[in-house]
Length: 249
Image (spheres, helix red, strand yellow):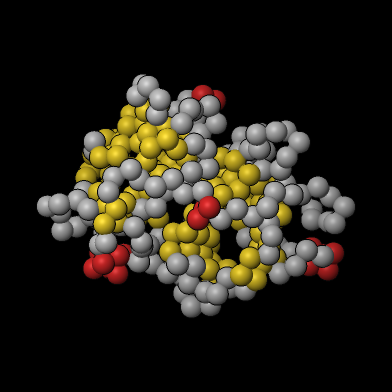
């Protein structure tokens, strides 16, 4: 079992200068702003690095640096960038500036977005995902899963109050048959202290069966919005690696 890993312990900060954008942070409910002079509306952007084969990378958006020396599992704080219908996102080797992939994406004004970098089958790709920027409803927490684990295959995801035979007997997955490379929508779950359990799609939960991943218990007070990145382990004897991004709260 791999310990629950909070993204706050694996943040790769944008290399551009962070400033206190108090009014902007209040309206967008995010922390950590990059000052972009001359823009009254901005797009909040972060990096999620799910690459396997890539070296440490530097990522720029419209020529502005979002992250430097990032590796697999790196999740940056949000930074403010100018909105654009055709923003150039460039991923380069951090050590020698060789371009690994360059792509164009839409950066929406006053929205939060993630730049997801992947290289399954050694094909570098960039996706721009729109993130939820408002808190989950009172008494609920919203989760989104990114399945970037090709060796693991499609997965089912459970959120359970305990790890026991009685709980397993009536458990139903919140997310089912999430294919490799797929991103689930945000799903709302009642807030409480929960375990996240990930299994191969269709697998019956029992105490004697081998699950892919069981988190430590984690408390949810309500309003949280989270993105969960699932990647294959570096060693075949380990379960999947799981990283959590705090979208809101």
